[in-house]
Length: 143
Image (cartoon, rainbow, N blue to C red; front, side, top):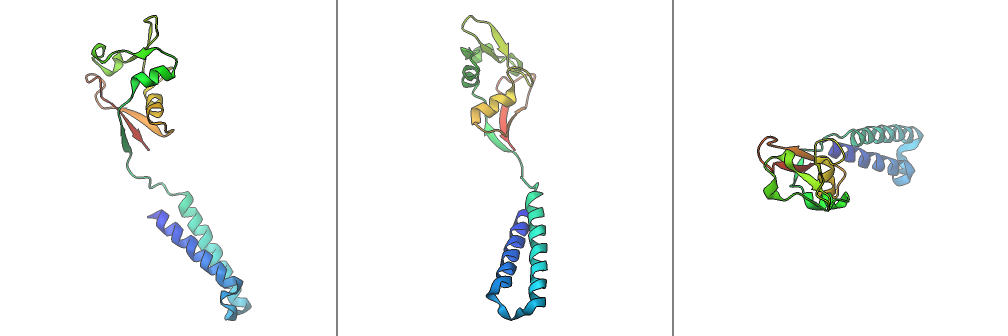
């Protein structure tokens, strides 16, 4: 809603500026000053609404995480196999020698980073809907 009002305010200010520059030559000096003040007020008000628009709406579900692709992007050989995973905390990136590093909420390998990699967007983040049980309960969302 703020965005629409902001855009309308900017349009109104543009029309006022056009009036100032000769589309309505009979408004006189005082009229031009009033039009300038009104145009400036609309412009400031509209810009304020557009800059402060926090109505981004609800988050968008992007989907799951591609752990294999994410692990390879970090220099690992692969992620562990799904049959090795019983809980979300079991997911790891595995080196070719078999050593592994877990994917956690914070750290070298993080779920938010995995979502950003999977969907190639900076505003993606991970939500673990069932941290203790389901191995595929991490979903990626966008702000």
